[in-house]
Length: 139
Length: 163
Image (cartoon, rainbow over all chains, first blue to last red; front, side, top):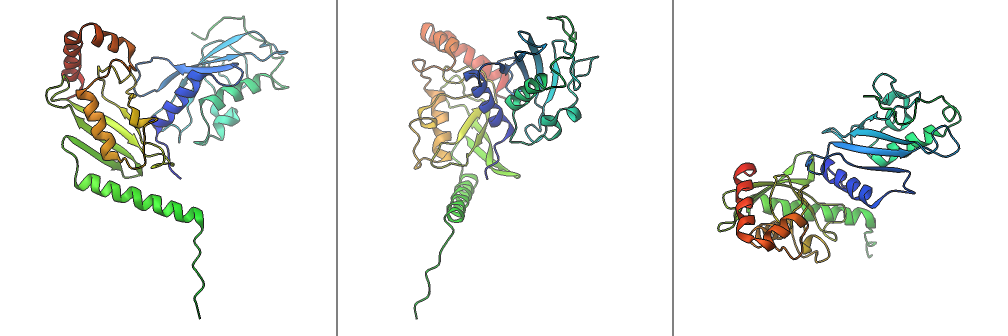
């Protein structure tokens, strides 16, 4: 089985992200279109309906290091959000507390991470958690 | 008594042929490189190559050494190799991320083509930019409106980045 190297894998993800994924409730793109190493990405999640997150737009930062996709990306929220796997001091996602990162494999992608985070927002335990004011950020 | 015909598992067979095909091509590529082009496979991924292309003489890219990366996907040779510049380059058919607009890397690919042909075509593209089929639209516009000035920028970038 051919192992797709990091850069070509990230180019595939970029092209998929540019076309748009799913129903548009999650999206991502390069932070800087000049970044030849494609390390820094922006993600956006539209809060799932019928939850406290409804109509909120969450911005995230995703960092794909040199060992990606063998190594999982680093994920942090820019928008303030109260979720059990998000550090309330700095917005960083604790990979041990989010299954998609804890059980990372190279078959997974930035898209999977965003979609799974959105599912967590709608889960029974998280859908009614009190949230910080809309539009506030961690920095 | 006739021996039973040997049966090969179809998937195993195509796999084998691919591996042999790939490695023979690589051997030849490394032993007998085209002038101004080198391609070396990674030790841990024989489908992934570090490539250096020298800018062709008489072009604004002359004396530049451009780094590229090349990957042979699972479907190769039925699908084209994936190729990208890692060195910044001011060229109408190469974008900011080093992606190349070249017909043989897309719809004009043929399994008869090889890594060597692909890299020679990329080198030829440096001598013959095609601003009518642009990928970097701003660079293409510059090339169409004032070719001499655009070539000056290409040369500056070559001196700055392709060393």
